[in-house]
Image (cartoon, rainbow, N blue to C red; front, side, top):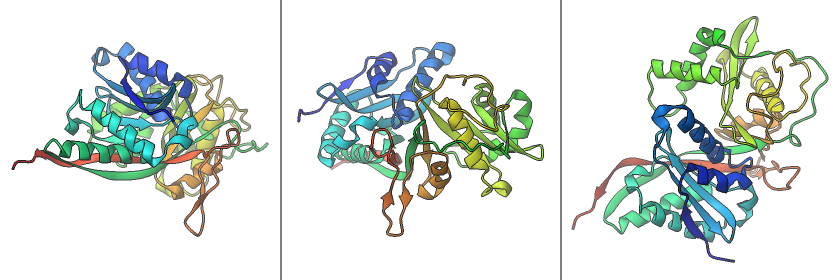
Amino acid sequence: MENPRCIRFANIEAAIEATAPYDDGFMNFCVGALHDHLRKSLEEEQFKNTEGYFFGVYRSDDLELILALHAAYDPTWRLLCPHSRQDFLTSAFLELAAGLLVDNLLEYVKPQAVSPIFGHKAAVDAFAMALMARVTTQGIDLNMERLVTTISSYATRDSIPPSLNTLSTHAIALATADDFEELVPLYLDFSTFVPGTRTREEDEARLRTVIASQLTWVCRVDGSIVAFVHLGRPSPKTIAVRNVYVLPAYRRKGIAEAIVGATTRYVLGVQLVGYEDAFVGPPAVGVKDFVYINAVDIAASRVYRRAGFLFPEQMADGEERGGIDPTSGKKGWIYSALWSITKPSTEQTA
């Protein structure tokens, strides 16, 4: 098989064009982010003419990996592999591809800037090891660690369960500006689980943006908001479930499954029974082919599996089984990882 080659895309538009044929359920974290960043650069002055780094690893004409960063908008590096190329990601190939990415990247940035990085676990693991090994030869002690391992999957029109022909018992509605004050305590509690340090003012500003996106829904019990879901990172074919939160007193009551399941069906363009008042007209960002989600672990993914996401079941022997895409016949889930520099790098001296 042909050896891989690495290229740097000239700009975000070139990266979007290169990834367009690979806009699938595994690529939303990168492709959706690219589209988000492009929209920001066109709409908001502070994001115009800001630098980004976009690299692709190819074999022949096939894109195998993409590494992307648009630091002015989001400090996280993203390393992803298209769903259609998963079967070609051998450990030998990843070691070679990671070395190519590191060599090319270090021509433009300092190694200390390559953090944090999130994406497909096998690829990110290989990249982090290659980066640390490479800078060691330059006399630099760079300490990186894998901080989190998660599991990512997606839902399609073919994977979601048949609609029940009964009225919903959950009062779901599109969030509006009138819901802001009631949503604030829920959103602040949710934000405590999000990495990074922010002020209350920053969180409240983010909540206003989330509501204004017309991609946030709330669930009420006895007239009070007890849960919300926010979708985001829309690309031409995909969108992500970004935030899911249910008040502790209302968990394990089917609310998360109901609100995620209903919004997923809606953005996939599938008929909803019992939720007609909550979902009026087409989605604000159009109908999608894939809905992506990233779960903390397999246990947390169970509720999403019931909503149609292709997470596996963990068996008593510890093995994962199932989670096969009914259309492609390929595995519809993958482990993801977040790596970060855990202490300042130092130059070694003799």
